[in-house]
Length: 294
Image (cartoon, rainbow, N blue to C red):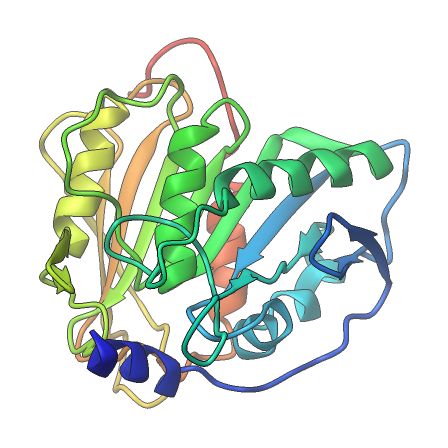
């Protein structure tokens, strides 16, 4: 386990940026900036994105790597990038208590799922948030946490995008409400394996099994469709990422999608359009109710 913890820490980009147009909230872990788009109008509801960092990283470091605050003005969304709690041992790394596999290595009883919901509700109390467009984005441990929070709070979360995270392996009933799922994963990820593995004996599912699990939760048909290739990574030639979509027969408000980065690593060097592609996908998948999809 120590080797994996070291690997997780080593893949973090320790980069920081300051948000423009930021206000802040505080729920006990220090000041949490809220990035407010320049065109924010209190009379019009705005989408909200919660960005969850990887193990040992921070909200600021994760945003510096992925670049979502830089496009908040363009797309008009509110953004918060919270910090996980600090471990009680080791190097006191920041982590999310997401699943049995990742990454609560010191058996903390912190309830991060409730904390994320509290953040959402606090932002809603201070801003006009579109309740049908509340999204999670997570990397690695943050991706695991995105799945945990979406499962626990399916009435609130419209969609999530997980980079190199995974869902759970235990058998559970479907969450009460459908949630749109996007899994992004590199086939050469040496930290969280594309094919699934275990951390200290605690298993996590493969990228394909994660997406299939949520397709079943969302009532989608078993047959996936391929879509046009995407260019997500600058140092891999051409449009390197294949797209597999479960969106037939799904319950309203649910779908499941996998972007597979051929030869992609745990911390890919993303293209200039990566953040835009993810945000556009999220905004195209609001919470909805009624008839199933076609």
